[in-house]
Length: 128
Image (cartoon, rainbow, N blue to C red):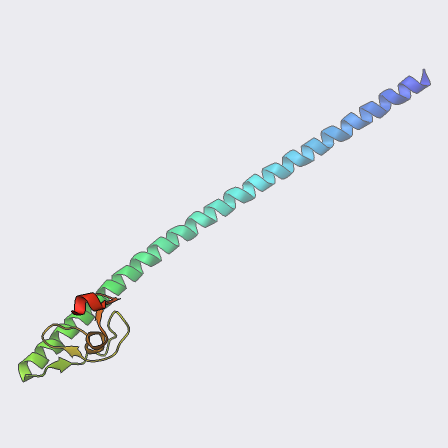
């Protein structure tokens, strides 16, 4: 009988230990879930800050581009008024050239010389 009692107590102890481990794991899962919720909230806040920063950048960029377009138009008009064939803007063209531009079209002189059209090199078929 002693052997049965001993086995019974071992099983009870094992069951108690198993329940204790289950509770530890449940607490750990709850802790991880709370950490995940905090991380998600932080991520959402960071996404919102990024969205706001992009809006601010778009406003600044739009203002800058509008100012640059107005300045380029003024420079072109001044060049036309004095009868010049080209004028200098100080800003690169879409292909990165800092060369003068034609007063008649505003096109980059360097792009025209090497055959760039609309950001792509013209083929010999279009030249013929």
